[in-house]
Image (cartoon, rainbow, N blue to C red; front, side, top):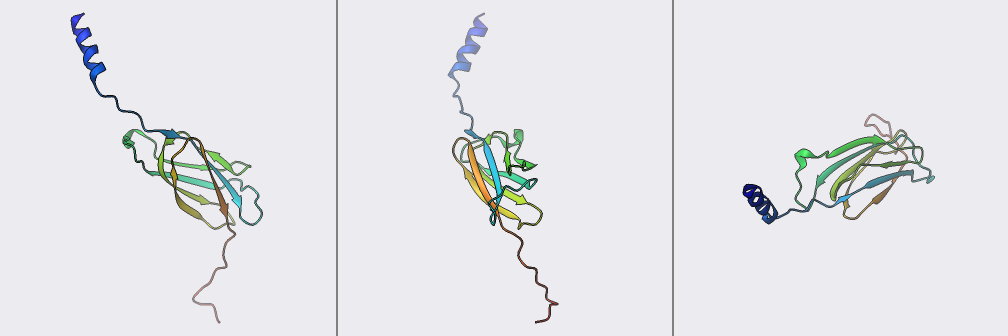
Length: 125
């Protein structure tokens, strides 16, 4: 019994480390021209780093999914910090940028542009 009491006393005296604050990310993908949601756009999110101490080997750090008919995707909880978001959709320019997730649930609106005209070195002027 004494051993258990000593163990509990030692356990209670150890400094507790707070877990990294978590957030939930929703990405909303729409057309820059029409404002309509883009269905089935590929969304790739990669966690880059956090200003809090976290152990990444035990965490999922990248997600790949597709948007719903409303142009939305909500990802599971992730640590607050910096993420890279890339969007790929047919008939639109590919999008990629870095975002800071510092608050509770956050929605990142992304507007995709139509593709630019293609040029070739072999085109005659």
